[in-house]
Image 1: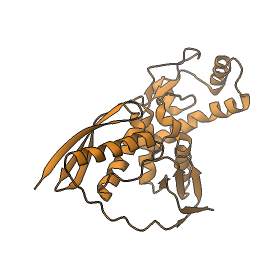
Image 2 (image 1 turned 60 degrees about the vertical axis):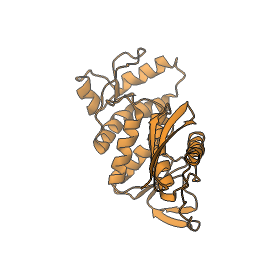
Image 3 (image 1 turned 45 degrees about the vertical axis):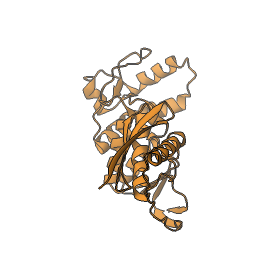
Image 4 (image 1 turned 180 degrees about the horizontal axis):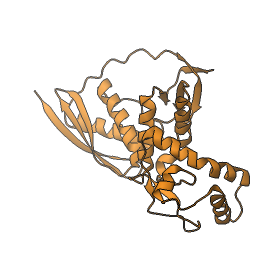
Length: 265
């Protein structure tokens, strides 16, 4: 029984990625990431998919992950060379025929798996609708995944408890937004936001079991403390918990899939 642990380095998007490929009897058993400096919220989602594809196909000649092409391509190329340099010959699993077009029928079709798309999916599911979400990248979170979890909670029961009923109101928030933006905001959009952010926070907190707390950083231009955040202060925690709750309630998530037709209605 021949077992090898092959280490190597690949140049990712943000720096060097140190990895280990575990091989036994010329079969790829695992791909372990030892150190990296990539955006964790994206990397953690992408690497699991990449590893699964490598092990399933027993090959590094697999598709890169959309939205993380530079990093996954570099990792695949480097690992393939490292295994070859170690004198290991793996035997790829014969590729299956090209996937056929699949048709899906749903009540609600959501395009985009960022924060807005995920919360929209939660609301639709809570109303008894069948939901399919389509995301062009190989991970969920969109631009949100690059940010923290700091948000205002004005008008929510969550914030009322955190700030011990500090008497914050949508009108106060609207005034602070206008002053902070030097009156360049769109009043109609601001009004929509300030009157809906509270109910939205309460809804998603219950739906995904999110536990907000007072944010370490408050907006100095605002007249009152109202910023809240998740314990990790990371948007990845939000994306992870919300997507998990959606999965438990039976949604369908199609990330970077081609050849599929979805009928909504």
